[in-house]
Image (cartoon, rainbow, N blue to C red):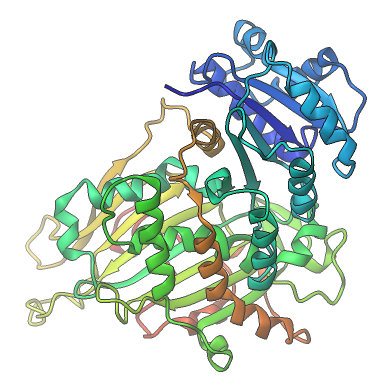
Amino acid sequence: MTEPCTFVIFGATGNLSQNKLLPALYHLEQAGRLPEGVMIMGFGRREWSNNNWRKEVEKILIPRARQGLDAEVFSRFCHRLHYFQGDLTDVESYHRLKTALSDTSHFPDNLTFYMAIRPAEFGTVSNNLAAAGLNKEDNGWRRLVIEKPFGYDLESARLLEERLHRDYREEQLFRIDHYLGKGTVQNVLVFRFANLMMEPLWNRNYIDQVQITHAESQGIEKRAEYYEGAGALRDMLQSHLLQLLTLVAMEPPAMLDAESLRDEKVKVLKSIRPIPPSAVHAHAFRAQYGRGVVNGEKVPGYVEEEGVAANSTTETHAALKLYIDNWRWRNVPFYIRTGKRMAENRSMICIRFKHPPQQLFQQTQLEQVRPNWLVMGIQPNECLRLELQAKPPGLEMKTRTTTMDASIRGDEEEPLDAYEALLLDAIEGDHSLFLRYDEVRWAWKVVDPILKVWSMERDFIYTYPAGSWGPMESNRLFDRDDQTWRNSIFADPEDGTM
């Protein structure tokens, strides 16, 4: 049985809290999934009463609640909401917070602290919590939930972890990657390990390449201060997409408990072939969006965005070619890419299989038979598609691509936000979808050599028009001429399919 806790949100009035955390907690309330007795405390600088805070939360939820705000549900939710006025940098605020939380008639002894704040403030808040004794588990458990980025490179990640581990055990830390909360991402595990038919093919003998794509049509959305210091490689590839790679490539875990899952993911990251500085340009590509047209509207280039330097070489598009040096995946290329201001919003995993070893149809009218693909759509299309070759009706020996299509979510089913699953897991103490420190460290080891080379190359960066599928030059990463980026979950229109 899940124990009740007090869920304290630092940065309660910020964008993350408004757009993700509070709507997710409300929807858990609506679904009857929040344990009885759970209290939600917002920590902020504004001098608000509990009633002020509840009215503010109502304003936040009205446009964000699925199917509108339910008065009865919100009434129940309001009874959980409390507000605490304090300063993140003031140690005295944390002593007052401890006193307030000691009122067990209102607040459960178990405490979850959620850092919906800037990464630069992680260390300050965690230290101040410890200084007030709020990290000690003398009476109930303590959990600290941290949003990415976990550092900006390997060294800063190491320093952050040293700082956190001075006052917290690893079991108390929940490093949240919201991408892992998406239902389709978790479905990768189910598809791989609950279906025997694919396992014999899931290796270097049958798979030609793996592509993982996350494309966004949006720009940086007035986040220049953050994005100029991060870029696409840190923002998406080092975290979200490397996590997807581990799920695709990992071995079956001994059990589905958190540590067994994370052990197998770490093995994959350890097996990724290191990229020496001299090979960075053969394995990594970066570019930046210029002016273009997205959804019929003209949009500015990256360097024309508010807050971006005119000579910035920060990448908004990044692509990598990685190899996993183990028995299963030796010499199978994994191509991963992300980009802003792309043609569409699309996240997907595309697995291309090798051609049959003997071309039986070479004496017929058929040209080279097209390869089989397995496509897992993550967003916006949550689906699983297997592309096979079949003969269409008629006298001639031809083929066309046919698909076996399994939609994971029906049109009538409401999409769940990833934070709903992750917040519930944090309350229940389930680490399965949260990152362990060695995962973070090995992921940084993969990209750190690339970051160092790019940091010294500030004179030039490739560009691509906003609204396109990125720069053609990124095709140089492919090993062969017949390999190219796949941009759609649907088959090539030349095959006569959608």
